[in-house]
Length: 419
Ligand SMILES: [Fe+2]
Ligand SMILES: [Fe+2]
Image 1 (tube, rainbow, N blue to C red):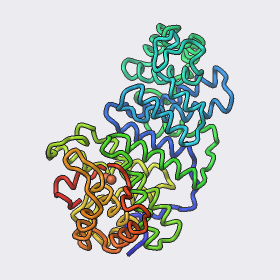
Image 2: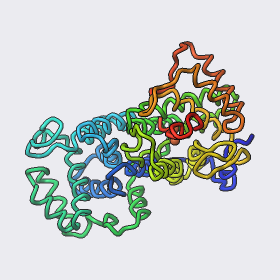
Image 3: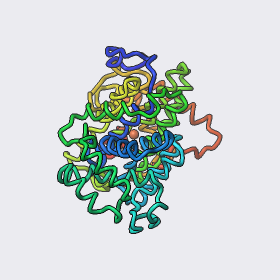
Image 4: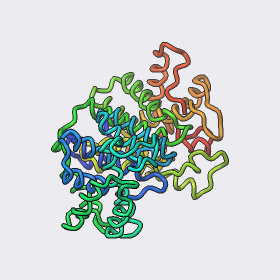
């Protein structure tokens, strides 16, 4: 059995490459935009607009850095209600270690200068300044997409003193007059250009992350994915715990265990693109709904591929629904293609899904799940990985150990337990 997938070995990127926070967040902000109704590139464009206004208005370096990440992450959980969204965004930003300045910028983003906003009806300068900046930046982009950049500036002017801070509106208008507001933020600008412009403005000058910070970011994004549907509450975290336990019991080297942990946390990132009407559906899925569900591992890979040092994680995470006999998806890979890391996550994912409640079935106990996993090995699931999972579960102090409280593995719906 190989470490890392065969397809990845062919690519051969540099594992020594350092990784910057802005690079990770900019790529992952695209994952957030896979959600229903989101505007592609909105976070990146809002970030550029907001940073330009902030620089012109004069902010401290600490504020600049908080604003940068707040704008990239402001729409975390955007399919839920506005109030909830701000709270979830704020809590994830604090979890990622970005501090209370960034968290409050998101928490109060829907407040309005005249006190008519949410969630607290704050008024004027009692609204945190960064939240006022975020608000004007996100609206400029939304108005520009709906109409045009000129109309957006005009609308912001009309709402000066109502929704927006008059001083910031003046700064916005002066930037627009000088032709400095919209560079790389126009509808026709290529995505790569926008992304490069955002990365150039990294307030940490591409400060490199250490392993613990990368883990925290992966955990934060696992939380975003899991929060999408209450059926998948803690699914990614649960699968990561199980996969980690399997990797330990298989005595993988430390760097491989870390890779498994991160890939498991991020494996369902592409699921953000599946509408909740499908994820939460009780009845059998239609053929076209199945096609949508089956796209998610490929999307996971595509998003993670944008982060150069995550390319190996991208491959492993993108293979979590592949099966040894070629019956999985999206690539119908076979045993000879699948690395030990991919096999571990496939086993952990099936266990995790079956241990969680689904719209169409109750959750199963460990006693019921293990015989199912054993029946899937060795033709679909790796038998060593299944044994290692059993060993891991036996090591748990509590017999009722639950890896998570719910998953996406809709494939168990179709073929019963043949995920
Ligand atoms: Fe999945
Ligand atoms: Fe999953």
